[in-house]
Amino acid sequence: MKTKKQGKKLPRILIVDDRLSERLSIGMWFEDAGCKVSTAENSREAETILDNHVDIALIDFDLGSERGIDLAKKIKKRYSKVLVYLMTASPKSTFCFRSSFREIQCIEKTLRPEQFVPVIMNFWEIEHQQGELEQKTRSINDLLPFKNLITGLHRNTKNPMRESITGRLEDPEGRDTRFVVYDEYVGHGDTIDICIAVLYGCLAGCLHCFFGLFRTNVRQLKVVEMISQVLHGLTSVHAKNWQNRKICISTSNEGDFIYNWKKVWRLFIILFQTFGSQISFVISTIGNVRIFKQFIKAYKEYPERLPVRIYWSLHTLIQDLREWFLPGTEGQSIDETIELLLEFAKLRDKKVTIQWLLIIGFNDSPEDIEMIIKKFNGLWEWFDVKVMPFSDQGKKNYLAPYGFIIPATIEDADYFALELVKRGAPARSRIDCGIYDDDPASMGNTGPNFGGFRPTS
Image 1 (cartoon, rainbow, N blue to C red):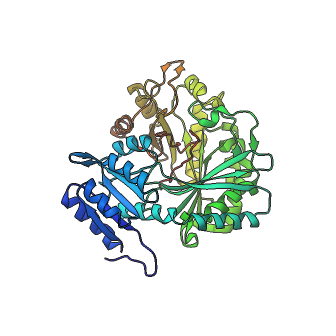
Image 2: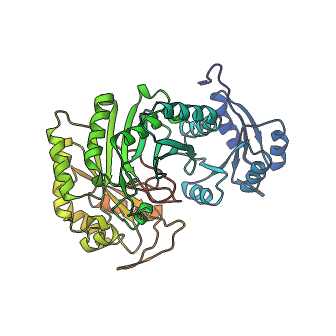
Image 3: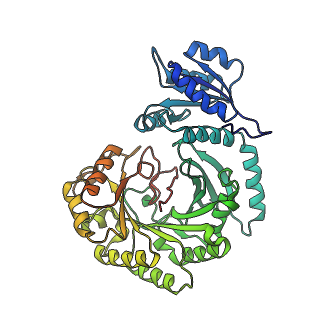
């Protein structure tokens, strides 16, 4: 079925692949979307076509006797305005090439057409809407009732399957907070996800987190500052037609909810009163018994059940090891925290997600699996587990009380999650939520580039 939109300029596509079947099938996907498509078997044919103007070049990594990456780099150098994608065979190779060649996008050829085409088309559209985006930024700044100024919006292109725009808000004292708005996956376009900061800096000091380095000069953000991030998110490229889409607000960006929970709760109420059933919320936190008691009390007293989900960063069930890894949990009983989360899960009638950041030699042993199964035995109706691989891109391994911390891979996370499933636990592995290629995990800020997650129902 043709999906061409009348009156809208569509990109001209060049597909370079040494296999005829791949050229024809991928070309057909884009022709069905209304694009003009050209194909080439090798770099010589591709360069001839490029002289006739191309907007997007899709190049297979393996061109038989040639390397697709060589052609991609040549095109990017000679035709700087062409959006170049390297088509890879697997997610693993995609992440590898993305970290090595930042100026070239990567995408898996194994994606279905309804995933593959929108990723390419949306990125191209974003590329050609920077002027419109800048104008929207200036307009919203003029309307905001306080002195924060947004200093820039840019798109996060580390993961072609995650469409996101990260922004920075600078306060009058020169400090800044950051937020990100994204649609994590094509095919989930019914929901706009906005990940906001609740603090400047963070007091938790978690060892895996970029902002664990900045425990001084921490400032709680005002409710209006948090609302401003939502407003900026709703004016971004990704928030088109937001009036007819679901909105999810996540407080997993820059600072833990527990250090500013009253203002976050006030934010939730204001947004819920404004958007009603259109909006939902995610709290990603290391947890705090005292704060959870207060939060649950406020939740019970509010006349309506706000759609809030909790993602709990557990990571280990060994108390002293957890307190070392997550200093903000010192003195916090794991058992008491579980009891409070269980109470909240029953109130909300939604599972609490346990986040397990997998690190080799730290929390990946069979004993760790057995501890999880034993601790949550009989509670899986109210809890599930998300296993995320830790990768210390740009960071040296460091010495822990239990040995050197070694990065994990998605295969390690897959295995760990599968072993949990075999023992009756609802578990899954998520590379998009793990710390990989400096892409932040859902539970906090783990690098200078900010990302996030889309909660599952």
